[in-house]
Every structure is written in structure tokens, then in C-alpha cells.
Length: 334
Image 1: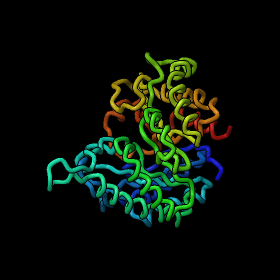
Image 2 (image 1 turned 60 degrees about the vertical axis):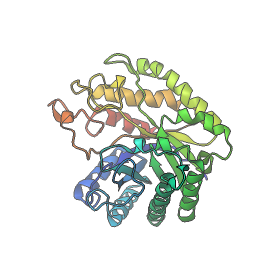
Image 3 (image 1 turned 180 degrees about the vertical axis):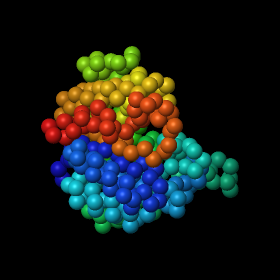
Image 4 (image 1 turned 135 degrees about the vertical axis):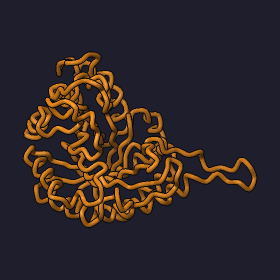
């Protein structure tokens, strides 16, 4: 299987039930197609009640219906865009999926077994089979086993169960993505680590690219070099395709110092966002192991009023109508 190169965009994070079947969703696809975007990661939010809950489920308010997922994936394909389907787990109590963690299954007090991971992964396998089958029926080119579940990575045997379940129902490119995946480099010494059972591994990359506002592209590229080195060491040890499952930066003055943050406090600065994207492409594009990125994100489904408090422009992660859109257009043409 040839490794894809992702010039991609994340679409529909926290899209509520009904969004993907709306005229607005199709308009957003048209806009992405006009930029020449080659890949779109379609997100379907699934839920669990709290960080320590062991059962995941589709929610009637939050989770997109399967038929609207099929419709929007078909429309993306009509526009010549390849699709990665990614279910993404969230918690009703407000904690993020990256916080999900349990004590290892064990028995310390006789008669009182600690049993969290096994039922959690049992439920996750049901979720994976469901969306893996949907990805197959919709002819998705790639399927992602959620993302940023960092505390789960050590559960090697359970993840092998998940990968096996996904392979039973989906024959395309199978992947996942974690936060700063290079931190798991030591685990690659185990030839049976579950990362090797995948076709690729991604990383969320929101590393600072500047120590001051209004840094130039060249300054950002130079600032990113130590980060490039960390990812290079991981990717070369992994020996399989590696990409950024998420990377992004707000269009806010000074956001290059904290690209992952949504409350930087400055005014609108679309050029800072564009510089961050261009610097990321230049810094990592020179590396033969790097297989592209999915920008975070195309549309904003979580209303953050601070993104709209400057009449000069939207200060969020989105790029439509901002200088970063031109950077993406040129990259996709290259």
C-alpha cells in the first residue's frame, strides 16, 4: 500500500447532529475544494459521560448521524477530495480525551478487582467496528482510530485488539495520532508495539515557533529546528509513514508563541497564522519521512466569543478568508 501524503484539513470537530446534512456544510466543502485541498479528515464526535467512564456511545445531540456522514463523504469524493474518517471521543463532564486514564487492571484488596481498562476497550472496539464499517461503505481512503488518547498508549495488548477489530472491517489506510508522539520513542524498541500494526502514526503538533510577536517565516523555521529533530528521531526509529494529525495556530497577534492556545489575548493577525503554516511546511517539508499534515481546523463548531471581538477579523484557527488560505492554496498546487 502506497503511503499517502496528506495536504489536509480537519472538518466538523464537534459538529452537532444535523450539521453535515446542512447547506452550510456543503458550502464549506466547496470552499475547501476551491483551495485545492486534497484530503479532509471528517470528524464524528462520540461521547462518554466522564473521564472515568468505561462506556462510549453515540449521542443524539452531539454525534452526527451515519446517513449525514455518508452524504458529506460522498460530496467530498464528488469534489475529488480524499477522506479520512476519524471518530473522536469527548466527555460530557468537560474533560478532554487526552485526560482519559485509569489504574491498571489489578486486584489489591481480595474480592475487589480494579477493572477499568478492559471494559473501556471492549466498548471502544464496538465503536471502532461501527465506524470502520461506515468508512468501508463510504469508500474512505483512510480511517483513524481517534486521536490524543495519550494515556492509553501503554495498553499494548488492548490496542492490538482494537487494530485487529478495525482490520476485520476496513481494508484501507489505518492510522492514529497522539500528542507529541515523539515522547513514545522508547516504546518503539518493542517490535510488538501496536504502532507497528498500523499503516502510519500521526502527531498533534502545536509547538511554539517564535519567542516574540511578528516573527518572520525564516525566524520561525529556525525556531522549529529542535522540534524537527525530535520528530525526526521518532519517525526514523518508527520506519513507517509519519504525519501531523493536527497542527494549527490562531490568527492572533503573538499566537506563534502559543499556537495551540485559544485565548492568547492579542488582536487579529492573519499574517502570524499564515507564517506559522508556511514555516511548518518549510521546516518539515524538507524531511523525507514527513507525510504532510491536517490543519486544525476548517470550521469552528465551538463558539468562542473571544475569536470575534476584533472587527479586523476572526482570530481563531480557521483559515477561510485569511492569508493562510493562500499559503494552503499554493502548497496544494505545488
